[in-house]
Image 1 (spheres, rainbow, N blue to C red):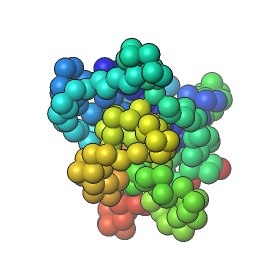
Image 2 (image 1 turned 30 degrees about the vertical axis):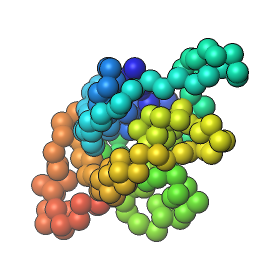
Image 3 (image 1 turned 180 degrees about the vertical axis):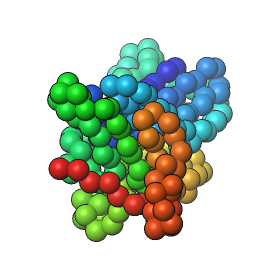
Image 4 (image 1 turned 180 degrees about the horizontal axis):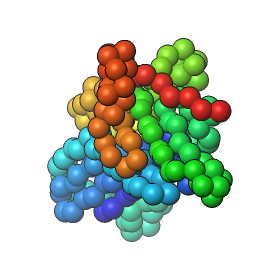
Length: 220
């Protein structure tokens, strides 16, 4: 089994700048691995940062269900939502990026792509307060919906997104759910990239910058 997910934190199609949280779930026989990365992609560079790596063991990876009362069994189609909902779509509203636009480059400006922010991945329970939380602080809080859809279908349970009794987002593997909530969804990740190179580049601007990991960048 192989399942990939992608959730865009920033989707600036005009300037070819994208920041995404991506999940990769791969299972064979009774073993499976999950890798979650953050990707910063521009017209000139692509940088990835690992947010989490997990290994799981299953009695049987693929669970089949009976088709009606026919006595025949098959793997159900996952009952998931495919969601495209970038938190930001241009740098003017995103406090973690400052870059030269494609139009400016075409007019002779030197390319520059600067990113610096602290990311908090959040579960579905944070959706109702997400915008207010982001408005109040310097960090970026983000709900990776497509990753969560995958997790509920095959990591938090093997119910394919909806249990046989109709329960949406079932959790039958409680230990895995608690582990994920206490690691990936309870951690802060500093994202600091300058022209395709990872490193806390803003620290070199002085002690005032180095003392604040969430020092924000703004450009209108």
